Length: 147
Image 1 (cartoon, rainbow, N blue to C red):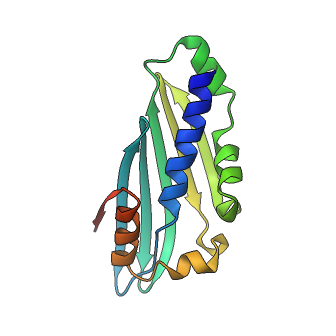
Image 2 (cartoon, rainbow, N blue to C red; image 1 turned 180 degrees about the vertical axis):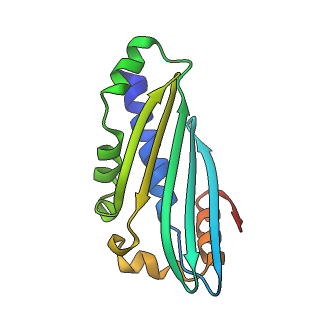
C-alpha cells in the first residue's frame, strides 16, 4: 500500500509540473513534445500549435510495475488516477478530458487530453510561442523538441 501511495504522489507531482509551462505559436503547425522520467514515471506532454495559438494539449504517463507484487497491482487497479490528478491540479481540474488509465502486462498507462479553453487564462498567457512552451517545460525538468 505504501508503494501505491508513493506512486500516486509521484505521478501527481510530475503531471503538475508538466502542465505549468505550455503555449501558443507564431505561424504554421508545430508540436512541442517534452518528456521526463521522475520517480519511475515516464511522462510526455504534447502542445500542438496551429498558427498563433495552442490548438490542443495532451499528456501520456507510464510506469513499469514489474517490481510490484500481484496484490500491489490489484490495489493500483482500484485507484482512480484520473480523478487524483484532476483533484490535485485544481486549477486544471476542468481541463482534463478523455482521461483513461490502464494496467496491462505490469505497465500502468494514463492518457488525457487538456481542453485549452478550460485552462486558466493567466497560464495560457505564459504560452505565447512554441519556444516559450519549450523553455517553460525545460525549466521544469523536461527534455523538449519542437517539430
